[in-house]
Image 1 (cartoon, rainbow, N blue to C red):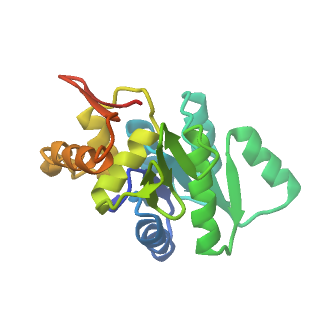
Image 2: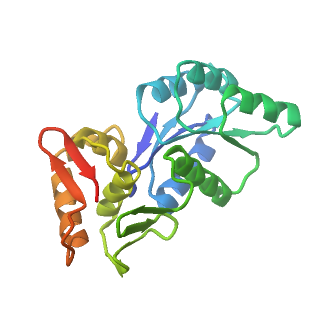
Length: 232
C-alpha cells in the first residue's frame, strides 16, 4: 500500500497491480485535482482498505491477484458500501459492461485510456456521490467552482491557500452537517494525518477571516467538542 497527500479534501483509493500505471494514475489525480490517493496492489488489500477507510471514490482494475475486481466489487456492495466505483477494464463487450453495472460499478473505462478522461470521470463520480452533479458548490452568497478551483463570495473573488480550499470544498459537500476535526483530517491527508492534528483550527481561522471579510453573516460555525458546520 502506498499513500500520497495533496491539495483537496477528497480521498481516492486506486486498486491496481501494475505499479507504473498505478503511479501514473495517482500522480494525475494528485497533481491535476489535488486528491489524497492510496494505492492497493492486489484485490485482498484493496478490499480491506475499501472497507476499513472512508473514500470519496475507488478506481478498480478488474484483473488483480488474490481477489479479482469483480469479486471485490460484489463483496464490497454486499457489505452495504456505497462509495462510487470506477472500474478499469480491458473488456468492452456489452455482456461484460452489463455484468459490471449489475455488480455495482458506477462507471467504467476501457484500457488503454486517457488520463484526462479518467480524471474527468473521477471528478464527476465524486460530485454525484456527494449529491452535487454541478461543478459549482453554493451556499448563500458563497460559490466554489471545482473545475476552475475558484471561490467567490457576493461576487467577489476570494484568494485561498491550497489547504484552505481543501477544507472549504469538503465542508461545501456537507452543508448543514457537523464535521468533526478527525473527519476533516482523514479526508485532507492519508494514513499519516496524525502529525497534522493541530492544523485544522488554523485553516478554519484563515477561512473565516477571508470569507467573512466585509460580510455580516458568518458561514463556518464551531460546535464545541463536536466540530464545524457550514451554514448560512
